[in-house]
Image (tube, rainbow, N blue to C red):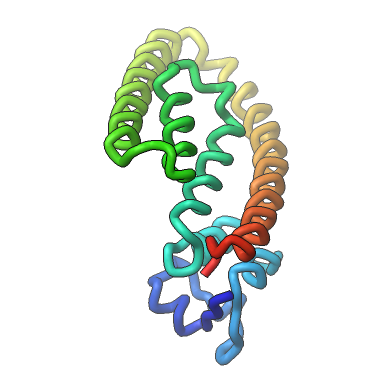
Amino acid sequence: MKTFTIDDVNKWNPCYDPIKYLEPGKKYTVLSILDDRRIPFADRLWCICRDDLLSDKLMRLFAVRCARQVQHLMKDERSINALDVAERFAHGEATKEELDAARDAAKDAAWAAAWAAALSTARSAARDAAKDAAWAAAWAAALSTAWDATQESQETKLREMILDGIKSGDVK
């Protein structure tokens, strides 16, 4: 498995100071970074999800896996189809053209949903202003708990995928 140092991480232009977590001269792997709980999860992902460490296939499958966790919120079939095509593409079962077409269709679906949500929000904003503050606070607390559980699930799955990827050559 490929190793890297804090000097390599600095060359990747992080938006945080890696010296807070990494020691000069020490060699790291994707697993050692993923397992280091001192580093915030988003920074660990940023550090290891790069094409010189993980294959496109592994990163694409992980992205699809993360999106599948919220698939129940996807109302437009074009978004779900994009996940299916991305997964097939990662396994060599779909073409780049199919992937591009599915991505474009999913973008159209996202824009349509954003416009619909914006219109709905604008209509109800005046009516709901008073109760929104209390609801938002409760929602934020629930989201925080859900985010922690989702993050842990993503981290566990990524670790499993990396361990499998070491065997298949998807981890460099």
